[in-house]
Length: 250
Image 1 (cartoon, rainbow, N blue to C red):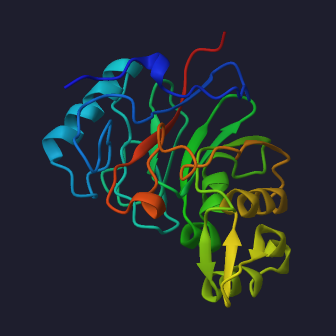
Image 2 (cartoon, rainbow, N blue to C red):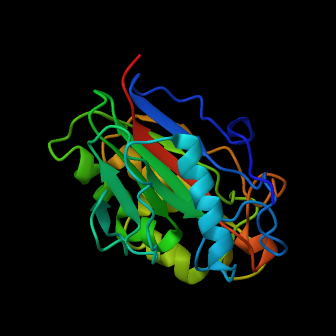
């Protein structure tokens, strides 16, 4: 079993503040066999827990943080917790403490990393279509910027609008609540279906919430199976991590 090196991860070219750090793991590594082949960090996708824990230990070793990574048990909701809370059933986590990595796991859903531009707080949010429509991004923002302090966002790898087919129920869930979401959908050749860009929808939501500095959103999990997991493309598969934390500014 081979663990990945740090240079096999994705390090976003995103610099909201000198104290903010971010990373995205990839499939690089040889800890889990097929169908999770590579570096699976998800405990709820059928892989052996011992292998997942080994992979998670590798992440923590590479980060060498003061606190353990704030792993979540994600449920496609909108609850956001503070790192260190005992009840980890949530889809977002935030911290204002240095060297306490916040993380979300995905395999098509959109990871949204949020950072106050004064470098005092960060959050990681898991935005599948249900969580996004329910307001998970707003919950993440309220956690780190309750008084509307400036925030920058980075959108991680997620299934793109060309690859993601959804039904009328998803279209109606968004557009009936806010017509501004219409540009995130394109009519599909299949009747009563649409192609949906969750990244575009997140950009619309962030703009409505006053976040003007939004970067990323151009990496597709289904188009890049060499680096990322895609549940829609593969079925049973693993999960990769998008992490954000605070360090000493430089």
